[in-house]
Image 1 (cartoon, rainbow, N blue to C red):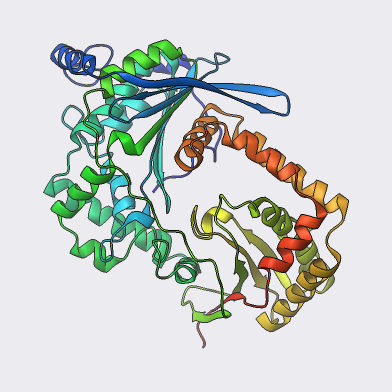
Image 2 (cartoon, rainbow, N blue to C red):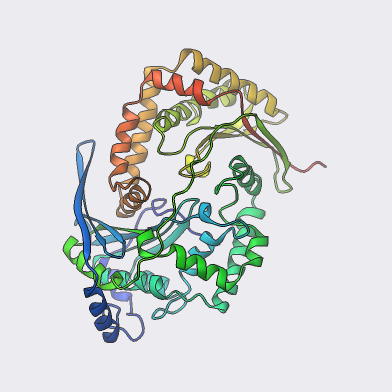
Length: 479
């Protein structure tokens, strides 16, 4: 439905805040007097059960993240940055398509839609109206492991954001009318972004097949059959199970004061009951016993597309950093080894595209994949032969110090760029907590890339880039 928060620059000024009207029947801070009084009474019964500070350091730049946890399990992380009068609010729920039951696929993504359909004190579409009216931005996205929501607004709208976000967590309007409306919206999105996009369904279904038998073995958007079979009661049960304070993390970055955030979060969120504990998920088997090869005809494709790769490691595995550097050396950019060979020297492809790790499975399921658009008349066998020869060369001879440093530089730029905005920092703080219980994980993770050696690259090439391939051949319809 929406894009990641760091994909576009953030625009907005405090002046635009004057254009925003308060929600109906509310005070300037967005809450009725009765709601304020009730919330204050209930929140008084809640308390901060844990509090602290974590400091990250990246290339000499320090980032302090203060944090507290409420007795209902809600974890909140705050990084103050008063350089601009804006702040980003980011809430990540540790639920994605991996958590869906058989026959109920697509529920995580469905709730990404439902969360904007109103709640007890906010009308359908009101959340977007009140954020956009303040000169801000609002969006959300669903992945295999998390569903995440964010708002970026002028600094004087802290109360409004906390009000809007807490109200939909307390009293989301899961009504039959809203349910049917959003089922149609999701089916329309499935048509636009999957069924009617060249290569999209074939690629997504192949990646799901790689992980068949696990929670990653189906499309995040779900299946049409499952969505049509779903009931209001089904999705309400999903909400009650996963959209609870102890399954969420809030990160707030920008022109805010920590003590004010702590007081107000208790006020707005403190009366929400704690939900069931999240059950541990089983480890994912990454063994690829045989080559997995598929040929698919795509009626929308104008030319072939080939996908080649291997299963590798989950994200928290010690070898991940060396694998990512190796794939950068092989595929990232026109000067990368395989791209240069296939595109410039042998003229076998017109495009060579590394597939991001985030699109190759999930946090606990990793694969290294590359896609290739062949030149006219060239075959997947010719392309695979070149890839195989270059992989063998890396296995025996490794890579050069210059190649290693270039890849590390690229990954350093990626990290710094991702942390350059309030929204980017908030997203990475939240994800660091969800997956690693560390709000500054992105900082230490960069240091792990910088410690990778040429010997590490050669070792992971021999360990993971084996003869057991993952190969997808997408062909246009035959005439």
